[in-house]
Image (tube, rainbow, N blue to C red):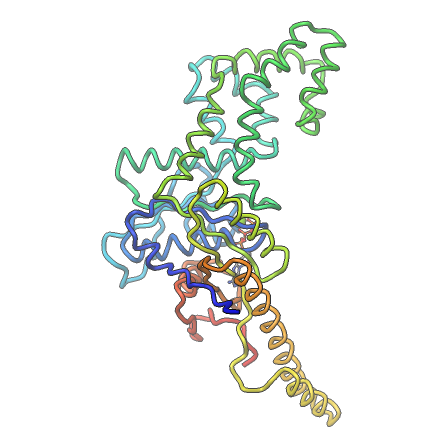
Length: 398
Ligand SMILES: Nc1ncnc2c1ncn2[C@@H]1O[C@H](COP(=O)(O)OP(=O)(O)OP(=O)(O)O)[C@@H](O)[C@H]1O
Ligand SMILES: [Mg+2]
């Protein structure tokens, strides 16, 4: 059986002016943030005007992108390559979930209602800790960035990172869930018994918002009912607005100019998660650009097989030459790991014929600066990353 997957041509994707939004999805810790930032940098250095929305980037990465102020707006990234295509630029921001929620409220309600909502302890608890808020707000921010791009022509490409959820699907599901939580039915559910008041009301209330029980235990006090009531009354004026907005942004994801990049690690669980996601995109009619397999162990370049290296390591160890034995044992371990990775990728591509794939090697250090992102971008585009001077070489035993 032919198990060779078509190659994801990242440069063609980034160079296509029809590509306006790229969404990087995947399960936790696989390299979504790194991939999003690397794609954005590469696109900018190839002449596009790009904004990347990162979510919880590692501190050092954030710092090297100039993201030290938490003001929820994009900041110009300096340090694009000297030989970058003229006209390109990169702005980066990290999502401030609470502030984005506040912006939604401010955009929807009259100033005094907005103030009532923003000051409400119930709102404050819900807006920062309801499961799915981060996903919802990422979409909300995407919608805002797209509106700005359309209005001001500031960016022609938006690259979106997604929250560190266990399942990649959360990004697609959470906004709908949160939308229906915040829309009319929820409001009616909790406001009716609240108006009736008393213990019965409180009991029913507890059932109705069991969804946020954890949050609410911290808020549940004497003030609780009054807070909820104020919140609900204020939110009443924004009835349905949340759901509508979630739907609008959801529609943007189906747009022809949007492409999803699914990131996976060469591990069984991450690849299974990627499979689910790919199937879901197809079902929802959302355009998949391809799959990135990140942190792949490259096959060590010497002709020495793992078995032979292990034998030689044993011989050296027996001859009391531990240093050489250690190097050979490492070589054997990396060869085995590389073979295992290759196998997993082969199985994945066999199960998904026709889905373009690109591979990024595990680099010898964490990716925390522009140079590191550039190395990842080079690998994403299918070009060799071998720059021993910069220290961004793939991990190898040599
Ligand atoms: N190809 C690579 N080589 C070496 N290190 C890498 C590579 N890709 C990512 N990393 C490192 O792995 C860690 C996790 O990457 P990243 O933060 O991009 O993952 P994530 O999917 O965004 O995680 P989360 O789900 O927590 O948001 C980071 O420290 C990053 O620098
Ligand atoms: Mg991340």
